[in-house]
Image 1 (cartoon, rainbow, N blue to C red):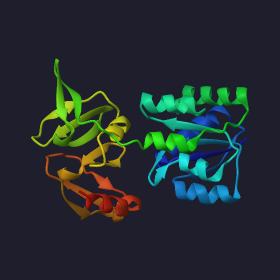
Image 2: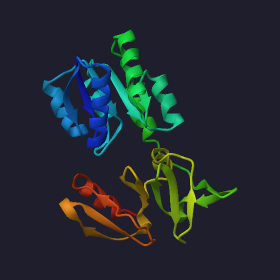
Image 3: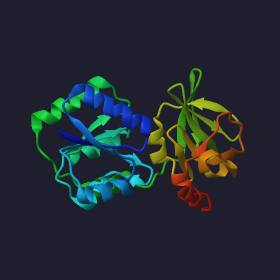
Image 4: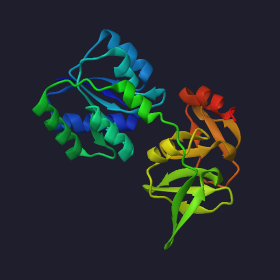
Length: 247
C-alpha cells in the first residue's frame, strides 16, 4: 500500500508517518508533501492508494488540491476544525480524524478505511466555501477565576497556546483563558487577525514593527508585553507583509 502524507509541519508529518507504519508495517510512505503547490505538482504525474492530509496548509486549504485534480484516491483528513465545519465534512462525505490524535486514532482510521475500500467524491467546492465563510463574531467569552467575561474582539491583541491551554492578552495587558481552540478562533475573529504559527493568532493593531530574524524569518514586535518570540517563516513572509498593509 502506497501512502502520501500532506502536512506542512515536519514534526507532525514524521509523527503521523510513525503511527501509520506502526499500524501497518508493510505499507510505504511514498511522499510527504508540505504545501498545496507541491501537492498539485506531484499528483500531476504520480499517484498513490491512500492520502492522509492536513487541511490548513501554509498556502491554502488542502481541499483545493482534490478539487482541482479530481483524484480518484481515498483521503483521510486530519483536522482541528470546529463542530460547524465537521458537520459540513459529514454532509459531504469527508472522512476525517480529529487533532490531537494518537496511535489508536490512526489505527482505527486505517481499519475503517480497509472496511470500506472505496473512494468517495466529496463536494470540495462547497467545503471550501463553507470554511471561508466570513466571520462575524465581535465578542468572545473568557474565564477569570469563577467569572465568565465578554471581551470585544477588537480589544484583543493576541491569542496564544501555552501548556495546551488557549489564552489571550488584551491591549490593557489583561490575560484570560478561553475555551475555544485556536483553529476555531481563527475562523471567527475576522481578517484583522493573522495566524503566525500553530501557537499564535495576532491582531494587526498589536504589531508595533517587524524585524529580520534567523533563517530569513520575520520577528513580530508587539505593543503588548509577551515573552515568547513570534516569527513568520520565510515561505509566508510575502503573504504576511501584504496582510500587514491592509486596513
